[in-house]
Amino acid sequence: MTATRVLVLNSGSSSVKYQLLDMRDGARLAQGLVERIGEETSRLKHTPLTGGGGESREQNRPIADHEEALKAVAGELAHDGLGLDSPELAAIGHRVVHGGKFFTQPTVIDDAVLKEVERLIPVAPLHNPANLTGIRTAMALRPDLPQVAVFDTAFHTTMPESASRYAIDVKTADEHRIRRYGFHGTSHAYVSRRTAELLGKEPEEVNVIVLHLGNGASASAVRGGVCVETSMGLTPLEGLVMGTRSGDVDPAVIFHLMRVGNMSADEIDVLLNKKSGLIGLCGDNDMREIRRRIDEGDQEARLAFDIYIHRLKKYIGAYYAVLGRVDAVAFTAGVGENAAPVREAAVSGLEELGLTVDGELNSVRSDEARIISPEYARVAVAVVPTDEELEIARQTYALVGDSDRRHA
Image 1 (spheres, rainbow, N blue to C red):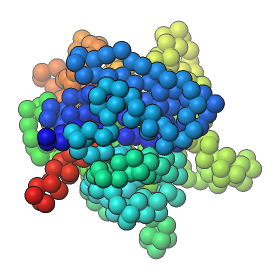
Image 2: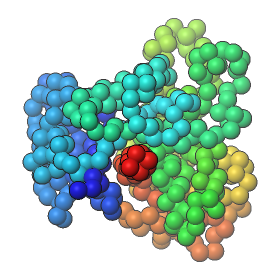
Image 3: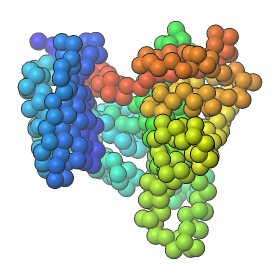
Image 4: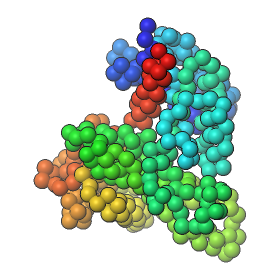
Protein backbone atom coordinates (compact mmCIF):
# COMPACT_ATOMS: atom_id res chain seq x y z
CA MET A 1 0.00 0.00 0.00
CA THR A 2 1.37 3.42 -0.99
CA ALA A 3 1.38 5.97 1.83
CA THR A 4 -0.27 9.15 0.57
CA ARG A 5 -1.58 10.85 3.70
CA VAL A 6 0.05 13.80 5.47
CA LEU A 7 -0.90 15.09 8.90
CA VAL A 8 -0.27 18.83 9.23
CA LEU A 9 0.31 20.20 12.74
CA ASN A 10 0.40 23.85 13.78
CA SER A 11 1.37 23.97 17.44
CA GLY A 12 0.83 27.16 19.42
CA SER A 13 1.72 27.83 23.04
CA SER A 14 -1.67 26.53 24.24
CA SER A 15 -3.19 25.08 21.08
CA VAL A 16 -2.76 22.54 18.29
CA LYS A 17 -4.46 22.95 14.90
CA TYR A 18 -4.38 19.93 12.63
CA GLN A 19 -5.52 18.61 9.27
CA LEU A 20 -5.13 15.21 7.68
CA LEU A 21 -4.90 15.29 3.88
CA ASP A 22 -4.69 12.70 1.13
CA MET A 23 -2.06 13.89 -1.34
CA ARG A 24 -3.43 11.92 -4.27
CA ASP A 25 -5.91 14.75 -4.75
CA GLY A 26 -5.34 17.12 -1.81
CA ALA A 27 -8.60 16.03 -0.18
CA ARG A 28 -9.06 16.76 3.51
CA LEU A 29 -9.90 13.69 5.55
CA ALA A 30 -10.20 15.36 8.95
CA GLN A 31 -9.42 18.60 10.74
CA GLY A 32 -9.59 19.98 14.22
CA LEU A 33 -8.33 22.21 16.99
CA VAL A 34 -7.22 21.66 20.55
CA GLU A 35 -7.23 24.89 22.53
CA ARG A 36 -6.65 26.12 26.07
CA ILE A 37 -4.07 23.36 26.67
CA GLY A 38 -2.92 23.42 30.29
CA GLU A 39 -5.98 25.32 31.52
CA GLU A 40 -8.70 24.12 33.83
CA THR A 41 -10.96 23.21 30.91
CA SER A 42 -9.52 22.52 27.47
CA ARG A 43 -11.46 22.00 24.25
CA LEU A 44 -10.92 19.62 21.35
CA LYS A 45 -13.11 20.05 18.29
CA HIS A 46 -12.67 17.35 15.66
CA THR A 47 -14.41 17.20 12.29
CA PRO A 48 -14.24 14.10 10.05
CA LEU A 49 -14.45 15.06 6.38
CA THR A 50 -14.41 11.69 4.61
CA GLY A 51 -17.44 10.40 2.73
CA GLY A 52 -19.01 13.83 2.35
CA GLY A 53 -18.15 14.99 5.86
CA GLY A 54 -19.53 14.21 9.27
CA GLU A 55 -20.70 15.79 12.49
CA SER A 56 -18.06 17.56 14.56
CA ARG A 57 -17.25 16.04 17.92
CA GLU A 58 -16.13 18.00 20.97
CA GLN A 59 -14.29 17.17 24.14
CA ASN A 60 -14.35 19.67 26.99
CA ARG A 61 -12.01 18.48 29.72
CA PRO A 62 -8.59 19.26 31.17
CA ILE A 63 -5.75 18.54 28.71
CA ALA A 64 -2.50 19.00 30.59
CA ASP A 65 0.06 19.38 27.81
CA HIS A 66 0.80 18.93 24.13
CA GLU A 67 1.55 15.22 24.56
CA GLU A 68 -1.90 14.62 25.97
CA ALA A 69 -3.38 16.86 23.27
CA LEU A 70 -1.79 14.90 20.43
CA LYS A 71 -2.81 11.61 22.01
CA ALA A 72 -6.37 12.91 22.11
CA VAL A 73 -6.11 13.93 18.44
CA ALA A 74 -4.76 10.48 17.59
CA GLY A 75 -7.74 8.94 19.38
CA GLU A 76 -10.22 11.02 17.38
CA LEU A 77 -8.50 10.11 14.11
CA ALA A 78 -8.47 6.42 15.07
CA HIS A 79 -12.21 6.64 15.77
CA ASP A 80 -12.66 7.55 12.09
CA GLY A 81 -10.32 4.82 10.86
CA LEU A 82 -7.55 7.37 10.22
CA GLY A 83 -5.21 6.58 13.10
CA LEU A 84 -1.57 7.68 13.35
CA ASP A 85 -0.56 4.01 13.12
CA SER A 86 -2.06 3.73 9.63
CA PRO A 87 0.39 2.51 6.94
CA GLU A 88 -1.20 5.14 4.66
CA LEU A 89 0.33 7.96 6.73
CA ALA A 90 3.43 9.12 4.83
CA ALA A 91 4.65 11.95 7.06
CA ILE A 92 3.79 14.67 9.55
CA GLY A 93 4.33 18.24 8.40
CA HIS A 94 4.92 20.93 11.01
CA ARG A 95 4.50 24.66 10.66
CA VAL A 96 7.58 26.35 12.12
CA VAL A 97 7.40 30.12 12.28
CA HIS A 98 11.09 31.07 12.24
CA GLY A 99 13.75 29.27 10.23
CA GLY A 100 16.22 32.14 10.14
CA LYS A 101 18.57 32.49 7.19
CA PHE A 102 19.60 28.83 7.27
CA PHE A 103 16.34 27.03 6.40
CA THR A 104 15.35 27.93 2.85
CA GLN A 105 13.33 24.77 2.05
CA PRO A 106 11.11 22.26 3.86
CA THR A 107 13.42 20.06 5.91
CA VAL A 108 13.24 16.56 7.37
CA ILE A 109 13.61 17.02 11.10
CA ASP A 110 16.57 15.53 12.97
CA ASP A 111 18.53 16.54 16.07
CA ALA A 112 20.52 19.16 14.17
CA VAL A 113 17.32 20.79 12.88
CA LEU A 114 15.83 20.81 16.37
CA LYS A 115 18.94 22.49 17.77
CA GLU A 116 18.89 25.20 15.08
CA VAL A 117 15.18 25.92 15.60
CA GLU A 118 15.91 26.14 19.32
CA ARG A 119 18.79 28.55 18.67
CA LEU A 120 16.33 30.81 16.86
CA ILE A 121 14.06 31.17 19.90
CA PRO A 122 15.46 34.65 20.78
CA VAL A 123 14.10 36.02 17.47
CA ALA A 124 10.80 34.11 17.77
CA PRO A 125 10.14 33.75 21.50
CA LEU A 126 6.36 33.48 21.11
CA HIS A 127 6.33 30.86 18.36
CA ASN A 128 9.38 28.60 18.06
CA PRO A 129 9.13 27.11 21.58
CA ALA A 130 5.55 26.00 20.89
CA ASN A 131 6.51 24.67 17.46
CA LEU A 132 9.32 22.66 19.06
CA THR A 133 6.97 21.22 21.67
CA GLY A 134 4.61 19.98 18.97
CA ILE A 135 7.45 18.47 16.94
CA ARG A 136 9.00 16.63 19.87
CA THR A 137 5.63 15.30 20.98
CA ALA A 138 4.81 14.03 17.48
CA MET A 139 8.26 12.46 17.13
CA ALA A 140 7.75 10.61 20.41
CA LEU A 141 4.40 9.27 19.19
CA ARG A 142 5.71 8.20 15.76
CA PRO A 143 9.54 8.03 15.91
CA ASP A 144 9.57 5.87 12.75
CA LEU A 145 7.71 8.41 10.61
CA PRO A 146 9.33 11.26 8.62
CA GLN A 147 8.61 14.59 10.28
CA VAL A 148 9.07 17.69 8.12
CA ALA A 149 9.45 21.32 9.15
CA VAL A 150 7.94 23.90 6.79
CA PHE A 151 9.13 27.36 7.73
CA ASP A 152 7.12 30.60 7.53
CA THR A 153 10.33 32.45 6.69
CA ALA A 154 11.59 30.12 3.92
CA PHE A 155 9.75 31.74 1.00
CA HIS A 156 11.35 35.08 1.84
CA THR A 157 14.96 33.87 1.95
CA THR A 158 15.22 34.73 -1.76
CA MET A 159 15.11 38.44 -0.96
CA PRO A 160 18.28 40.24 -2.07
CA GLU A 161 20.58 41.63 0.60
CA SER A 162 19.43 45.13 -0.33
CA ALA A 163 15.96 44.17 0.90
CA SER A 164 16.86 41.89 3.81
CA ARG A 165 19.53 44.05 5.50
CA TYR A 166 18.78 46.81 7.97
CA ALA A 167 21.01 49.87 7.72
CA ILE A 168 22.76 49.30 11.03
CA ASP A 169 26.31 48.31 11.92
CA VAL A 170 27.00 45.09 10.02
CA LYS A 171 29.04 43.45 12.79
CA THR A 172 26.32 44.07 15.37
CA ALA A 173 23.61 42.85 12.99
CA ASP A 174 25.46 39.64 12.15
CA GLU A 175 26.34 38.91 15.77
CA HIS A 176 22.69 39.12 16.84
CA ARG A 177 21.08 37.79 13.64
CA ILE A 178 19.35 41.08 12.96
CA ARG A 179 17.93 41.15 9.46
CA ARG A 180 14.56 41.10 7.72
CA TYR A 181 13.22 37.54 7.61
CA GLY A 182 9.53 37.99 6.80
CA PHE A 183 6.65 35.72 7.80
CA HIS A 184 3.42 34.21 6.41
CA GLY A 185 5.70 32.75 3.74
CA THR A 186 3.67 29.57 3.27
CA SER A 187 0.61 31.68 2.50
CA HIS A 188 2.50 34.02 0.17
CA ALA A 189 3.95 31.04 -1.71
CA TYR A 190 0.55 29.39 -2.14
CA VAL A 191 -1.32 32.56 -3.10
CA SER A 192 1.28 33.84 -5.58
CA ARG A 193 1.31 30.47 -7.37
CA ARG A 194 -2.50 30.19 -7.29
CA THR A 195 -2.79 33.72 -8.71
CA ALA A 196 -0.63 32.72 -11.67
CA GLU A 197 -2.94 29.74 -12.25
CA LEU A 198 -5.93 32.09 -12.13
CA LEU A 199 -4.32 34.16 -14.89
CA GLY A 200 -3.63 31.04 -16.94
CA LYS A 201 0.13 31.49 -16.68
CA GLU A 202 3.14 29.83 -15.07
CA PRO A 203 4.46 31.42 -11.84
CA GLU A 204 7.70 32.28 -13.66
CA GLU A 205 5.74 34.55 -16.01
CA VAL A 206 3.94 36.61 -13.40
CA ASN A 207 4.75 39.46 -11.01
CA VAL A 208 2.34 39.55 -8.07
CA ILE A 209 1.80 41.72 -5.01
CA VAL A 210 0.28 39.49 -2.32
CA LEU A 211 -1.64 41.12 0.54
CA HIS A 212 -2.14 38.67 3.42
CA LEU A 213 -4.62 40.58 5.58
CA GLY A 214 -5.71 38.83 8.75
CA ASN A 215 -5.29 39.81 12.39
CA GLY A 216 -1.62 39.63 11.45
CA ALA A 217 -0.98 41.25 8.08
CA SER A 218 1.88 41.26 5.59
CA ALA A 219 2.59 42.14 1.98
CA SER A 220 5.05 40.60 -0.45
CA ALA A 221 6.44 41.40 -3.88
CA VAL A 222 6.85 38.21 -5.92
CA ARG A 223 8.74 38.36 -9.20
CA GLY A 224 8.44 35.27 -11.39
CA GLY A 225 7.51 33.06 -8.45
CA VAL A 226 10.37 34.38 -6.28
CA CYS A 227 9.92 36.70 -3.29
CA VAL A 228 11.99 39.88 -3.62
CA GLU A 229 10.47 41.94 -0.78
CA THR A 230 8.11 41.53 2.15
CA SER A 231 6.75 43.82 4.84
CA MET A 232 7.48 41.90 8.05
CA GLY A 233 11.05 41.99 9.28
CA LEU A 234 13.09 40.53 12.12
CA THR A 235 9.76 39.82 13.80
CA PRO A 236 6.11 39.94 12.65
CA LEU A 237 5.81 43.46 14.13
CA GLU A 238 7.14 45.41 11.15
CA GLY A 239 5.05 46.57 8.21
CA LEU A 240 1.29 46.96 7.82
CA VAL A 241 -1.17 48.08 10.47
CA MET A 242 -2.56 44.87 12.00
CA GLY A 243 -5.24 43.81 14.44
CA THR A 244 -3.16 44.41 17.57
CA ARG A 245 0.32 45.21 16.16
CA SER A 246 1.49 48.69 15.24
CA GLY A 247 3.45 47.82 12.12
CA ASP A 248 6.01 50.45 11.13
CA VAL A 249 6.94 53.03 13.78
CA ASP A 250 9.89 55.35 14.26
CA PRO A 251 12.36 53.32 16.39
CA ALA A 252 12.87 56.42 18.55
CA VAL A 253 9.30 55.98 19.83
CA ILE A 254 10.67 53.16 21.98
CA PHE A 255 13.41 55.34 23.50
CA HIS A 256 10.90 58.14 24.07
CA LEU A 257 8.54 55.82 25.95
CA MET A 258 11.43 54.54 28.05
CA ARG A 259 12.69 58.01 28.94
CA VAL A 260 9.48 60.02 29.16
CA GLY A 261 6.89 57.33 29.84
CA ASN A 262 9.11 55.32 32.22
CA MET A 263 8.01 52.16 30.43
CA SER A 264 10.09 48.98 30.52
CA ALA A 265 11.13 47.03 27.43
CA ASP A 266 8.53 44.37 28.26
CA GLU A 267 5.77 46.96 28.64
CA ILE A 268 6.64 48.49 25.27
CA ASP A 269 6.72 45.01 23.72
CA VAL A 270 3.17 44.39 24.95
CA LEU A 271 2.07 47.85 23.80
CA LEU A 272 3.33 47.44 20.23
CA ASN A 273 2.35 43.79 19.79
CA LYS A 274 -0.93 43.50 21.72
CA LYS A 275 -2.33 46.98 22.35
CA SER A 276 -1.65 48.75 19.07
CA GLY A 277 -2.86 48.47 15.48
CA LEU A 278 -6.62 48.63 15.06
CA ILE A 279 -7.37 47.73 18.67
CA GLY A 280 -5.10 50.52 19.88
CA LEU A 281 -6.66 53.03 17.51
CA CYS A 282 -10.34 52.30 18.11
CA GLY A 283 -10.70 49.47 20.62
CA ASP A 284 -11.71 46.86 18.02
CA ASN A 285 -9.58 44.51 15.92
CA ASP A 286 -12.48 42.89 14.06
CA MET A 287 -12.88 44.60 10.68
CA ARG A 288 -16.56 43.66 10.56
CA GLU A 289 -17.21 45.53 13.80
CA ILE A 290 -15.13 48.50 12.64
CA ARG A 291 -17.15 48.73 9.42
CA ARG A 292 -20.40 48.52 11.42
CA ARG A 293 -19.24 51.40 13.61
CA ILE A 294 -18.25 53.44 10.54
CA ASP A 295 -21.70 52.93 9.07
CA GLU A 296 -23.13 54.35 12.30
CA GLY A 297 -20.94 57.44 12.01
CA ASP A 298 -18.21 56.49 14.51
CA GLN A 299 -15.27 58.80 13.74
CA GLU A 300 -12.77 56.85 15.84
CA ALA A 301 -13.45 53.72 13.80
CA ARG A 302 -13.28 55.75 10.57
CA LEU A 303 -9.84 57.11 11.46
CA ALA A 304 -8.57 53.61 12.34
CA PHE A 305 -9.82 52.32 8.97
CA ASP A 306 -8.24 55.25 7.12
CA ILE A 307 -4.86 54.68 8.81
CA TYR A 308 -5.06 50.98 7.95
CA ILE A 309 -5.79 51.74 4.29
CA HIS A 310 -3.18 54.51 4.07
CA ARG A 311 -0.42 52.11 5.15
CA LEU A 312 -1.72 49.42 2.79
CA LYS A 313 -1.65 51.80 -0.18
CA LYS A 314 1.90 52.87 0.66
CA TYR A 315 3.04 49.26 0.45
CA ILE A 316 1.17 48.59 -2.79
CA GLY A 317 2.85 51.60 -4.36
CA ALA A 318 6.26 50.71 -2.97
CA TYR A 319 6.08 47.12 -4.21
CA TYR A 320 4.86 48.28 -7.59
CA ALA A 321 8.09 50.29 -7.78
CA VAL A 322 10.18 47.32 -6.63
CA LEU A 323 8.68 44.99 -9.25
CA GLY A 324 8.56 47.50 -12.11
CA ARG A 325 5.75 45.53 -13.74
CA VAL A 326 2.77 44.13 -11.86
CA ASP A 327 0.43 41.55 -13.35
CA ALA A 328 -1.82 41.08 -10.32
CA VAL A 329 -2.56 42.19 -6.79
CA ALA A 330 -3.96 39.32 -4.71
CA PHE A 331 -5.92 39.74 -1.47
CA THR A 332 -5.99 36.82 0.96
CA ALA A 333 -6.60 35.76 4.61
CA GLY A 334 -9.58 36.71 6.77
CA VAL A 335 -9.84 40.42 5.98
CA GLY A 336 -8.44 40.17 2.46
CA GLU A 337 -10.88 37.41 1.48
CA ASN A 338 -14.00 38.79 3.14
CA ALA A 339 -13.84 42.57 3.50
CA ALA A 340 -14.93 44.07 0.17
CA PRO A 341 -14.65 47.67 1.51
CA VAL A 342 -10.97 47.08 2.34
CA ARG A 343 -10.22 45.82 -1.17
CA GLU A 344 -12.07 48.69 -2.78
CA ALA A 345 -10.41 51.34 -0.61
CA ALA A 346 -6.94 49.83 -1.02
CA VAL A 347 -6.91 50.33 -4.80
CA SER A 348 -9.09 53.46 -4.96
CA GLY A 349 -7.13 56.28 -6.56
CA LEU A 350 -4.57 53.91 -8.09
CA GLU A 351 -6.23 53.81 -11.51
CA GLU A 352 -3.14 55.37 -13.10
CA LEU A 353 -1.26 52.25 -11.98
CA GLY A 354 -3.84 50.08 -13.75
CA LEU A 355 -5.60 49.09 -10.52
CA THR A 356 -9.35 49.12 -10.08
CA VAL A 357 -12.11 46.78 -8.94
CA ASP A 358 -15.52 46.05 -10.40
CA GLY A 359 -18.04 46.93 -7.70
CA GLU A 360 -20.35 44.02 -8.47
CA LEU A 361 -17.56 41.43 -8.68
CA ASN A 362 -15.96 42.79 -5.52
CA SER A 363 -19.19 42.45 -3.53
CA VAL A 364 -19.64 38.74 -4.31
CA ARG A 365 -18.98 36.41 -1.36
CA SER A 366 -17.25 33.21 -2.44
CA ASP A 367 -14.76 30.63 -1.22
CA GLU A 368 -13.33 30.37 -4.75
CA ALA A 369 -10.30 32.18 -6.15
CA ARG A 370 -11.57 34.88 -8.48
CA ILE A 371 -10.74 38.07 -10.38
CA ILE A 372 -12.61 41.16 -9.14
CA SER A 373 -11.19 43.73 -11.57
CA PRO A 374 -12.95 44.61 -14.84
CA GLU A 375 -11.75 42.95 -18.04
CA TYR A 376 -10.16 46.15 -19.29
CA ALA A 377 -7.96 46.60 -16.20
CA ARG A 378 -4.23 46.55 -16.91
CA VAL A 379 -3.51 44.83 -13.60
CA ALA A 380 -5.70 41.99 -12.33
CA VAL A 381 -7.06 42.34 -8.81
CA ALA A 382 -7.76 38.92 -7.32
CA VAL A 383 -9.21 37.36 -4.20
CA VAL A 384 -7.39 34.11 -3.50
CA PRO A 385 -8.34 32.15 -0.37
CA THR A 386 -5.14 30.99 1.23
CA ASP A 387 -4.54 27.35 2.15
CA GLU A 388 -1.46 27.10 4.31
CA GLU A 389 -2.26 23.56 5.43
CA LEU A 390 -2.46 22.30 1.86
CA GLU A 391 0.79 24.10 1.04
CA ILE A 392 2.53 22.53 4.05
CA ALA A 393 1.18 19.11 3.08
CA ARG A 394 2.33 19.53 -0.53
CA GLN A 395 5.82 20.61 0.48
CA THR A 396 6.04 17.80 3.03
CA TYR A 397 4.86 15.12 0.62
CA ALA A 398 7.11 16.38 -2.18
CA LEU A 399 10.13 16.14 0.12
CA VAL A 400 9.26 12.70 1.47
CA GLY A 401 8.47 11.44 -2.05
CA ASP A 402 11.79 12.75 -3.37
CA SER A 403 13.58 11.04 -0.50
CA ASP A 404 11.77 7.76 -1.17
CA ARG A 405 12.72 7.88 -4.84
CA ARG A 406 16.35 8.57 -4.03
CA HIS A 407 16.49 5.57 -1.71
CA ALA A 408 14.47 3.24 -3.88
